[in-house]
Length: 472
Ligand SMILES: Cc1cc2nc3c(=O)[nH]c(=O)nc-3n(C[C@H](O)[C@H](O)[C@H](O)COP(=O)(O)OP(=O)(O)OC[C@H]3O[C@@H](n4cnc5c(N)ncnc54)[C@H](O)[C@@H]3O)c2cc1C
Image 1 (cartoon, rainbow, N blue to C red):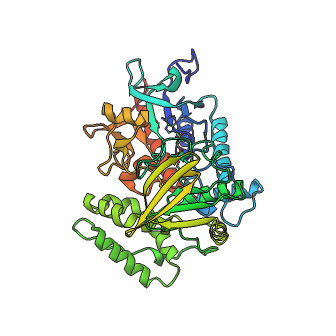
Image 2: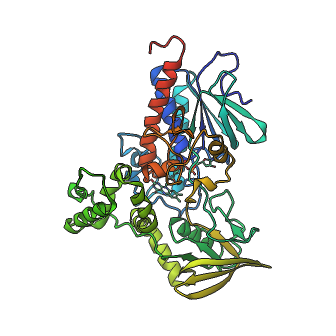
Image 3: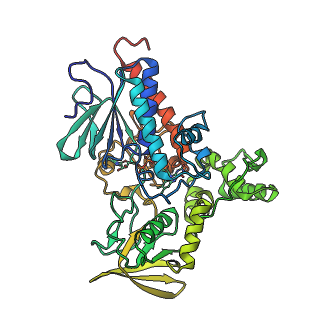
């Protein structure tokens, strides 16, 4: 048993936060502050399988050319204080042209976590635990939940926060299972071996592909990257520097009495973009915070249509790269070290010293012999196929169910996880990427930050009411 509470100090509420990335870290920071402000002696266990507390997948990179894809002014971790990150960067002496290195953002989150921990002790405490939660069940030992950790540990908790991040990418076809196939480029050390100078095939042409191409070509002067995707769409470049968007950039979406339909929505967005005299990027940025509300209103068939036909175009316009990253990609292309292939991976077979891949497009095929095949296709699109022990167990036991689109976990509007019968749990909540089916736009810091603050208020209120002697 992990001693999350102080031995002999009496019974204090315990919340287990599963996942130490940006979502779990922000949830912990807001939980600590909320409990402290209300005088509740909370204990928080922040559990991360890789010990990447404060960093997670996006902010654990140490490569200086891996930059934030959003301007620092849009990445504050503090609700109601949009300039918090830019002030922090100035005080930390970190010069930037608007786009900080992602490692700096990891440092920012880690420092915020440490500061929150310090300011609330001893009444409220967090403990950082490095382990994988392999199962979570209803508890029968005085606390609502029992978490089982890899290597036999256990944590009993009154509530749990699922901050497990994106699903790992799924292979598009049968791939050789061996050392030359890298299934998840974000795993610690995943790219180390691939920097051996042999050519590399990367599946996907999004932000992750660019990160991988920059890291591998920097690591070895001979490495050449072949990026493969059906539509060969690359993320657009931020038009930067840019003045703040005007209010008129907000697309005028008509609210019909009948449910919102995708065709009407697209028509309205197109009309607004055409009428707006400024930069199209203003329109996309103004639309983005509206997406969760609009997504919720769309009928399921329209959401499926969007995912099938339009999501890829939305993604490349909404997830843009800083000019510096775009210049790096252009230079690599010019030097013949980055080639984009349009088509789909039809076959991949393991060879003695690498992989042979076949790319099909419009009736023709292109074959490549490469040393490495790296999957950068983004999060898998079907949670029901997951082999993650925790998620698998939650789905199989009925403690959680997939959202109707199978993109993640089904929850109510507060992130309360619905069981197999559709009942929202009062003590299991999720935030960030697992809520993709519910909100669609739920993976960037502004959404995660707001969800973390709201769930902290909700959980701490609930625990407060459940305390013996509470007036509620
Ligand atoms: C390359 C990249 C660049 C990005 N750039 C930006 C940007 O510029 N601006 C922006 O707003 N957003 C950006 N994002 C998006 C966003 O900030 C991240 O997706 C966000 O950090 C998600 O954090 P998370 O904690 O939900 O997931 P993750 O970072 O994936 O963290 C989840 C953690 O949980 C752990 N975990 C999972 N399951 C278990 C388990 N069972 N037991 C224990 N631990 C577990 C994982 O190991 C992982 O460390 C970027 C994302 C990426 C990938």
